[in-house]
Figure 1: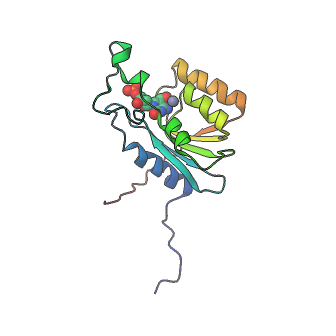
Figure 2: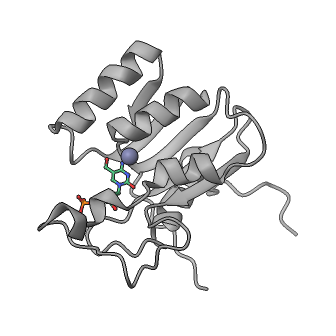
Figure 3: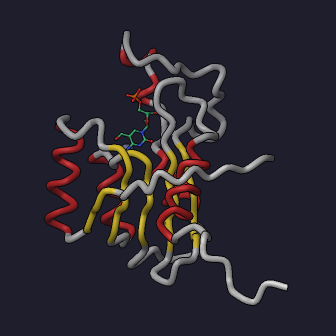
Length: 162
Ligand SMILES: Nc1nc(=O)n([C@H]2C[C@H](O)[C@@H](COP(=O)(O)O)O2)cc1CO
Ligand SMILES: [Zn+2]
């Protein structure tokens, strides 16, 4: 019988970013699948979310296009993963919570993050860092004292069979 504890368990960061990425796999967006996971100060998962249309707005009827007439693109309709994670939380306050997200939050989500009391963001990709949306987002997060840091990928492959 083994007496020592196993040592190859996943870290907190791998766990929470893994959950965020798994959540993103639910997204129907053909171009960008984003996932978010909100965690309490004592490492308990409070909420999760991914990018998708609001309830009642069919994935098959609303557009997933990126270009064309504004009303025929997804941008006016899609709820971002971070906002969904915030809105999915029905337990009270998110004061002091941490947000793990696979893509850096936009300016609109930054407002919701700040107002909900989330104090730390751990993000993976920052592919829109040069856009006004992300520049404005960082301006607001800096002013509000919300810390953000890039997730340090460990390269570990986490495999699950479902
Ligand atoms: N932080 C974010 N969280 C998100 O959930 N999204 C969503 C909105 C869209 O569904 C998709 C971005 O579409 P695209 O422009 O990469 O094809 O990701 C986008 C961002 C970017 O700021
Ligand atoms: Zn957003």
